[in-house]
Length: 304
Image 1 (tube, one colour):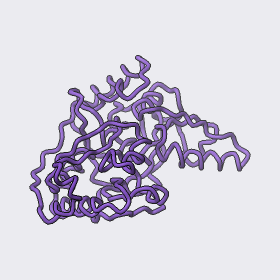
Image 2 (tube, helix red, strand yellow):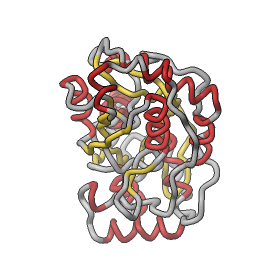
Image 3 (cartoon, rainbow, N blue to C red):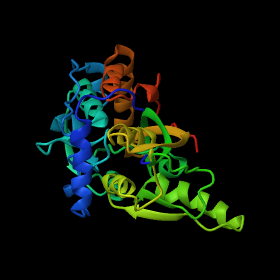
Image 4 (cartoon, rainbow, N blue to C red):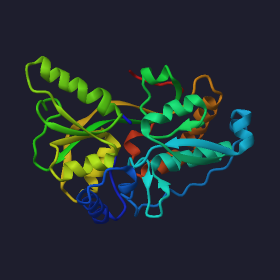
């Protein structure tokens, strides 16, 4: 996954119109499609610095007073832009709170999704924050600090009757370089061809908004994305979209940092502090993501 939602603030119709306008305009990049959900405000939580946790931050980062964060948008409700062009979302609110615990100010740097982990490895960014699924393969490159649990969920136009476990020959939209693109759909498609059935036609888009647009317009039969993202798109579709099957392949989201960096311990303790003191739950519920909250943050918690 780039890898749930329950209630949403007002603005469903505004977001739907944004989707349709973008689609009709033939948008083809993130900058043209990152205004979805612009009516939503960040969470208001009070968080004070915690000296014993802040002291774990590596000295060069601590002395700079900043935490350089690589992020890819849009991926609502986790990270996307509001009407002013500011990056907001669940991930942003949580990282801002983590920064407060550590006495640091997050500085968000936009990047292509597949360049963030290499940039963390190279030291360009201190940490990545873009709904990364913590996997064993990725743990060979970076360490992860877990902060949420998400799965995969498909969406379809209402009444389409798509079965994610029997989608041979269907056109399925995904965002490029996500788990759904690199792992999930290829595995399902291989199962189809092994059984003598037509392959799934995977249709890749540069942004999640474009994948959602394609489904709204009937250019694909279904889309596959992280469960928070799919649920968010469904809720803001004004009844045009619905789930296709349930949530599966649940796994932790995590913040990637350089292998062996003390920053991992600092981030893990900061997340755990927010969990223990309630700010974490407040932030998650503000974005309708209470279903995937975790009781304990760990370093390298991949399940596969």
